[in-house]
Each structure stands twice: as C-alpha cells, then as structure tokens.
Length: 400
Ligand SMILES: *Cc1c(COP(=O)(O)O)cnc(C)c1O
Image (cartoon, rainbow, N blue to C red; front, side):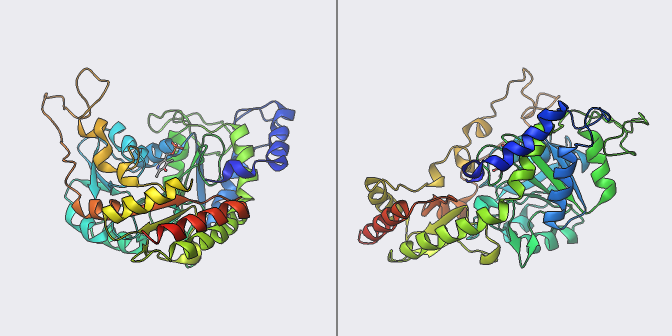
C-alpha cells in the first residue's frame, strides 16, 4: 500500500504547474491554461505505460467500474459475474446499475476460479469481472477464453494491481477493458481517482462522453465545439490536481514495485520455514506487483495458532475470512438486502418481488481456502529492523 509513502517534490512540482495557471478543470479555458492539460497527459502516459491505445480518467475506481459497465450496456435484468473475494466496490457498481452480481469461487490464485465461472454463466450474463486481488494476476487468459466462447465481454478490475503483468503484458489489457483505482491506499495514488483502459477507440469515446454529461467529444480531448449529445451521461470527471499527482506517481510505479518485490522475497523466505506452509499461486512471479504476501497453512486451527504468535510478536497478519470489506460471507448489508430506497430496489423489483437472494454458504471452496490463509501487506519502505522482526516472528510461528 505504498503510493503515499513516496509522495514528494515530484508531486509538488506537478501540482504547482496547475496552481500557476489556476485552471482546475480538465476541459476548456484554452487561453488561461497555457497548454497545461494534466489529466489528458496522465491518460496518455498511463495508456502508453500499459501498452494500450486509450485511457479514460475518472473520479474513482468505483466510478471507473460504473462508467465501463454502463458503456457495455449493463442494466436491470442483466447478470454480472465477479468473485466472492474482492472489495465491496466491485459489486456496489454492478448493483447501482440495477444489474445482479453473481459470485464465483476463488482458487489458489485467490482470484476467480475458471471452472466455477463456467458453471455460473447464463443467458443473462452481460459481463464478467475478474479481479486481480492483492496485487497479483487472476487466470485472465483462461477467463477471457471462456468468455469468448459465449461472446461475453471481460472487464478486469485492476484496482489493486496497477503495474502488474503476465509475461510482460499489462493486467487490464487482456479483456475488453481494465479499470484502476488511485484511492489513498492503492499502489499509486491521486487521493481519489480512477482510470479505464481499452484498445477499442469507439468504446473509449462512449466512456469519454458519458463521464462528461454526454458532451460530444468528437473534438476530444479539450475541445468543446460541437455540443451534440448521443445519449444521457453523468459527471465522473477527474480534476487537474489529481491528474498532476497521477503523473508524478506513475513515474515512480515501477520503482515502487521493484522495492516491494525485494521486501516480499525476504518475508516469503522466512515464511517458508513454517511446516506445511504453501504460497498463493502466481501466474507469473515476475509480473507480481508484490503488494501482499499470501500464504496457506494446514487448516484454520493451524492458521489461528500461527497468527497468535505473530500478533504477540507485533507482526499480526490479516485473515481475510474475518474481513468485512473483502469477503462474501461477511457482507451482511448485501446478504440482508439493506438499501436506502423505500421500494427495496435493487433487491426488490417494481413488482414488489425479491429479485435475488444470497446464501453466505454458497461458496464452500472459497471458505476452505480463506479459513487457512494469512496475508501480510508489503510496503515500499521497510526498515531492516522491521524485516528482521517479521522474520524472527515467522521463525517462532514455525514452531507451534
Ligand atoms: C479500491 C478498489 C476499488 C474501488 O476503488 P475506489 O477508487 O476506492 O473507488 C474497486 N475494486 C477493488 C478490487 C478495489 O480494491
């Protein structure tokens, strides 16, 4: 979770450029802005970095999901498949569009299990949203292949894995589009912010116009001449200050990943000493962004004992099976259909009938994995002292 760790003079310089012009809006003000278009430049550089043609900046990772799903035509009556281990934002976006989130099992990648995906595809499936959780790759090539046989688009939720790759190819470029988050705890941060990347120009133009109230962007970006509107839109525009910070953070992304890979390798080596330990499956270890180390213990009891020792040593790990923000059986507001609408939408339809219900026990394979998994977040800057104490704690935990 490192973006904020490296905030420095580079970010300040980029912000100063914006403050010097006084233009905070990404469009218009041609004369006053003196050629400074930070959001536009951030989009161009981010797209180039990922090796894809088009990038659309938005206000958050959640709005990136909403804008992309909207542009794919998702709405009421559609099902969107994602995984039962993700941040709540993934399915919040699906529900907000009135579609039904359908959850798959995860496997040892801690991401979508392709075998279960096959079982969950129906005639109503409108999009498949695998998530590259905790910095590392989903089985994206397999997932895209399955989706293609059904002609269903894949949206990669890459919020937690900017800079991640498989054999050099960037995550977010395998599916129809990839969405990113730059919120306060993501690998690169703009405080709040998001991005969608795609190789499809026509699809990008739809997103570009939708996130800007439907303004005609034929003279995109920057120009607002022809004000025709092809469809209704909304406002998810990123502002110049965020674009400026994004440019400075993007330039540091690969260096941050290298530093985290080094720290992670040290911790992984120490964790190997625990009898019976296993590690999360990585599709390509070189392309792992190394923001987390996830390891499997023999069973939930072993997991509890190990974490007790780690905690006593001041190095407690995360057990995501207890985590209320990332794991399906813990999403009590979703499971109990809690919504602010008086009608009960989106859980209750216009006819007053329940549209869908969720059973917390419907993902047993995921539970089997999650109950014996521990996770350490990895930082860019970890002192030798901190690394040493983690290694010592892991050695002790290996003896219980
Ligand atoms: C952070 C995150 C999001 C949402 O991003 P925000 O910028 O916080 O809205 C979506 N999906 C996943 C997997 C995330 O971790």
